[in-house]
Length: 216
Image (tube, rainbow, N blue to C red):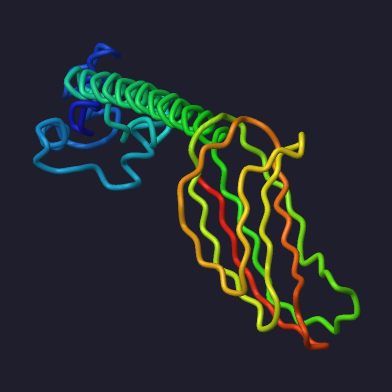
């Protein structure tokens, strides 16, 4: 509702004609008619007089009342925003459940993973006939086949690589000065020990290196 419609509405609520209202404000009837038909607008001083007469603030006089169309648009917009919010919540919840399910499945698979690596490069000042180069442990959570890769060498003597279980049963054994091996072996569920030793050297200083991987 514009200012002209406001003045007309307030005037009629008071039961005044345009003539009577013009006399109150000491203006002509034509001036009031021009205001109400939006051919002209009251100046600030006149707006104050009008608002004082109707006992409202200038802000209330100038305020435009929402039309039914505007209110309907606001309601539709509000409903649309609620719908979008609900849709976002539903999609977000679905994505969270989807990711949680994926992580759970992945976690279940990872429980059966074996990914063991041991490697080093060493030089020994030797005095004993045997060197215990390394001892390591890995666990197989589920019986199955595992890929084994071995690359090791010693500049003097021989290396011995042995894999045994907790019952001292032998599952893998390889000897030599230069060892390269890659194969798939069956391991039962349980704990295993990898032991690397060296012997048969003639020099006082021995250098060696090794890298061994067991994984599925």
